Image 1: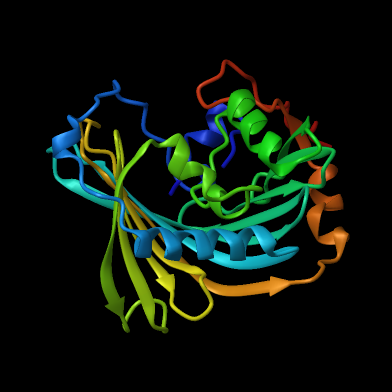
Image 2 (image 1 turned 180 degrees about the vertical axis):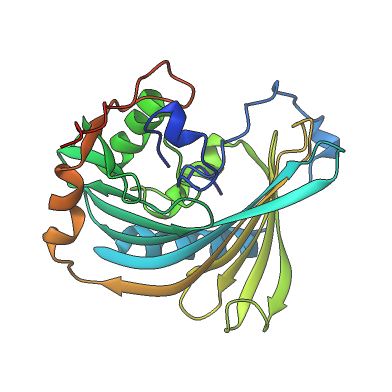
Length: 272
């Protein structure tokens, strides 16, 4: 259940903490499993997933923390695990703020329904681009323009359950309950599609995700991607001023472009 940051320029993007954090794995070749090998889709598992989707889609505004852990091999092949923390504020249909304090270089992302800004305070650099009027369209545009990727994106789209259809869900089953994840009782659900396998811990009472672990079995590295959710607040409204930043807007401008783009950083100010 992943999807859901940004790129300024090669010089900045080379730094390890920019909130794009991890790149979504390339889609492997499609492989259809014979019907006899597919596992059933249990109604109980789907009921839990759909209840969570309804809760997320029905929220007018929300805030939460997303701790993203992703795996990357070291030079000797040993798997290493890196983490980024996203502090997310969102209001439907088209306002999003993501503050990423670390690990790595802290950064901020703002979207107000008209423009999106990616800002690195330590460098006082910002990339600004026009954006579509809905968050779903913005997420696609941000990826196409600058490889912007939010690991938590499926939590804020208009139809969170659409991801199951897109992934070609082939099995879903109820694992049981946990009392140690997210500080609450969660229902554990396992799902699998043609090219993805995931396990989700979803609050039994509030239907909010607490932990999502995803593996892409056809990815060469078989890497594990994990997002842990906390500090959930479902809100009626958020001050629109939160979704922009005068400081970011007045920073030194950089093109909104993907990592590795042939770009020059702005000239430093002349010495007095």
